[in-house]
Length: 272
Image (cartoon, rainbow, N blue to C red; front, side, top):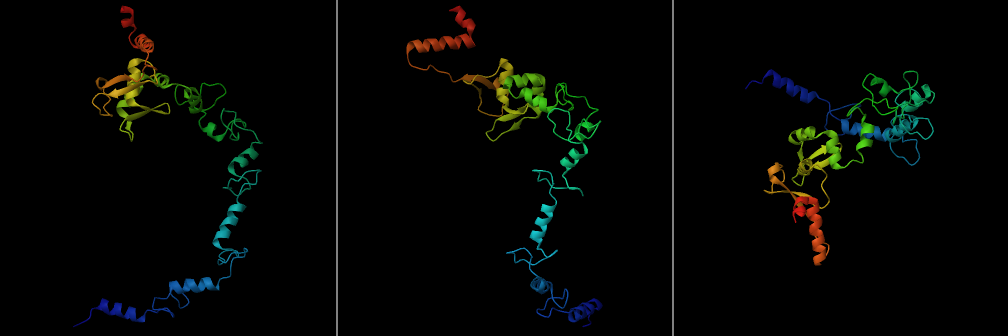
């Protein structure tokens, strides 16, 4: 049976291939395979020059660990109490390099502590890039407008102390209704939630607040009639209250009933 040309070349290559002087693996360098070459190289290398370190030296008489630490320590900003890394060829981090060039002047915009390097050392790079956008209507603020003619920082200050219904009115009932149909998400409990000015609210409570025109009381909750928690149709929602008399005296029950009628059905109270 004749042997093919490729098979002859393959067999000759296997026979003539040099092997490691210790094992039968192919040679990588200096008559050794990859495994034994690395082992002998580590043994022949001197140890790290740092005390109590037995690792082999890789660069400048240091092991990889201590060499990396030395580079990090040498590349820290030299400003007082600053440990930021240096990203340029200088001796200071980006912020202190800009402060040095601006002679310590900061951006005149509110809530901004970046160095002023633009427009005659009055504003920072960030506010310089957004200078052509409409500015926030708050006094002494150069930040661009985002919502209701205000920047995000001033908007957060305004809505921080708002109640849930005030947040809904601030955004707009029509916009909230559109978000309910498009942007609501289901949470782990099965209810659907929506974000209103940075606060997560349950959709069924939002819809009931829109219908009532006020915030829900702590004693009120919204019940799904069919028990399906993500079915937020108005005809499937009803208002429940968990208030009850504080005692069992007849006078307490009468007072509680009168308060309930005054709040929910004052017309029924006037009839009596």
